[in-house]
Image (tube, rainbow, N blue to C red; front, side, top):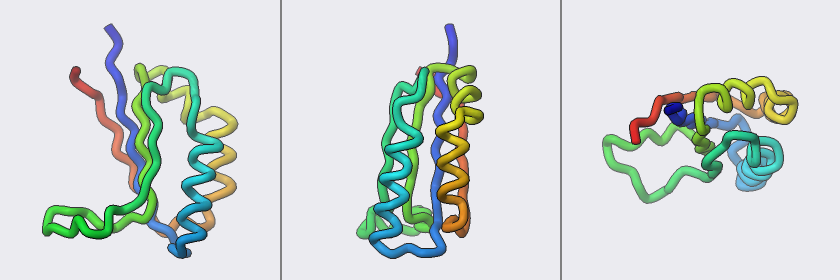
Length: 105
């Protein structure tokens, strides 16, 4: 049985205007959704009123993907749409953090 892989990415932007945040969300939907082996795709923003000491608030946009297995994740990483997304958007990234984990069902 293959093991699902969670790929979570948190983007802190140089230009964090509402328009810029929406643009990155739209770009995520256009380029990063619908890949083979992708069991879940979601994109969103920081929840402003959740500000407990344990909350990490150093991001503006979050990307959440779950892949059926490692092979699907690896194919996504080199897919032309993923690479185009990076090229189109990286100039506005102040910091990007990626959290990959093997999921236990």
